[in-house]
Image (cartoon, rainbow, N blue to C red; front, side):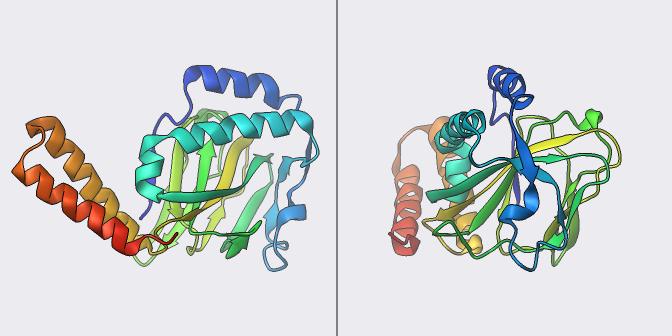
Length: 220
């Protein structure tokens, strides 16, 4: 399942991010690329030893961990590393698949949280491949796209301006993307049912099915 999640960051959050990003030190992004991806990765990322970047990433991690829709869609068990990426004109990231193990976690879900106004740069679309074809994403600042880490994807070359984004990975309690999708849809349905009709016989049956499927499929 590929899902776009809006307003992960508030206007206040974004203002704080913008106020700090200009002072963050960026280095060559190849330092965290695997041996196969190193040849197609051309971007910058916040230096791992930059205290300002570390504080900013900690704040962004808290926003991600607390977001209810992200929790429903991904069933996060553990978040992996977060990277602040910067693409200047001429930079891009060629076709690749993310590493299976990222800093000690199994990468089940990948995500990109867009930070730049899409009107401020040309190119830079995140393109995700699936059996149905390619899908390109260039979202508003503060919006996020979540997708299975198993997919081939790329970032198109930026031809004007600067593209800033937060990228990251997580390990899910539910390894299978098909099962995560089914749980997300069932969870969405039971919540709407509760909002519209309250707790009743039908809600209890749907709620029971959701909880028992999660119990059946969750890995702890």
